[in-house]
Image: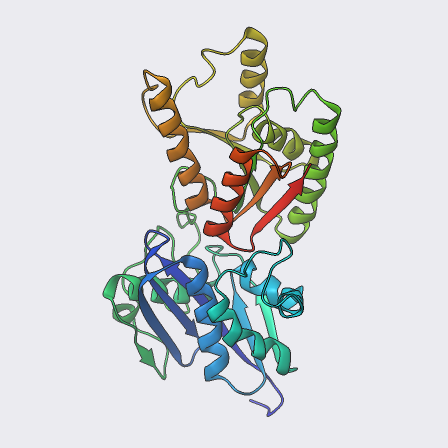
Length: 348
């Protein structure tokens, strides 16, 4: 390798439970690799750690290839400059999540002109992305990491955690089962959930029309970056209903995620018709629980479980809020805790 040619290193992080036991890994195509374990962590922390460990292990010209937009966008869009300027506060003046790790990684972004980060679609058939994914998952299960100077063996990788994962450095065979998302019912792709204000009159209002246009702009821009973008929406009146409308306007498919069968059985006829029309336009409908709860308390609990499912499966979120509605603000906080900087806020 020429002296000026950068080393290419793939990185990935994994977590069982988010938070829960996690693992990180980096690997050079055809070369060295390393992995590590954390007994109580999050997926985002493992993604940052993987990039940090790769940067710390490669002092020369380096290209880090990651499937984490959280990490890649921080370098590419220079989020860290704003964090430093605001004393480690984000644009909302809140403390930056995972600051302890970013404080170690940001100096590499700031001081190394020979460092570049590139994004790769996760579970998209890239052999090296599969390798680091399997190494990170294995570390999360094994409770320890490992290292090697040559590519890992199948035993060191452990079994694939999903159908269709490639073996060491070998391309995925033709006709192999396509990769699946965390929940096998959702399609592959970059999953973005639209949540926030729950207002039955929002969709029909001028404010709702403006919000739908802004949402469509956000989704259209995200589709430019990720052509495989898929919107997740529960279709509840308000932000979720507008999410489906904006997805159609932006030419992005959407998946309706329902907490239980027929969640609009007690709604007026007009709302039921609108809901059924939105279901018909959905790329797919996922019903999380088999039975409709018998009382309001049970329905609220099922909705909370649905929101947890969305946080666990989405890669990013768009949250509509007016800065005053306590329920929307709570939704925003919980998604920021789960997804960190992968949350866009549309303040109405």
